[in-house]
Image (cartoon, rainbow, N blue to C red; front, side, top):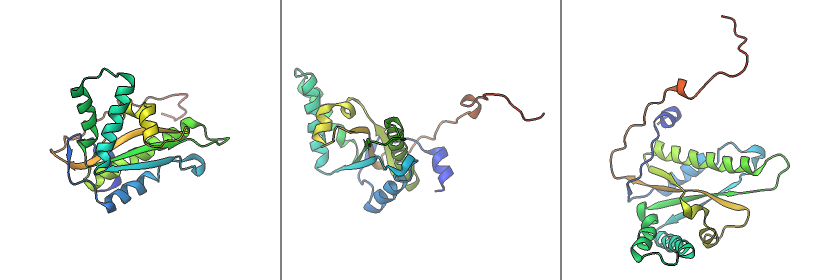
Length: 191
């Protein structure tokens, strides 16, 4: 699939099953992620790969975060939280690593990691791998951050779920470019 086709037609796919992406596919997706715009070549990203039994461990970590905030949470609700990482065979956690730099503020580094995550899901689509990007409260919870071994200078940008689509993907909705662009400033183009 060529780049413009992938960019114009990419859609999220929330219903995923085995198999997850192959090692070669993961490498291709991560290579695309690493080509994201990156002011000063800081490479402010790292990616955690969660597969196999680690998905159950991730579910337990998410449940621990819920219990830290609401110790009275019902067992059924905790079970639902524990099952979240089982929605796909592979999860890639995009992590922003803030680095001190006189010309690159944290917001640029966060946006760069977001662009890297976006490149990854576009590459997944181009390879026929189903993907969707989630955050939710777990992405911002200190218990999850600590459990994943993140440093004080790191934040989770998103959980990217990857696998084989269970259903045929719906086509991307059409976009009217005139709805998203407007002229600004003086127009000095002669009529």
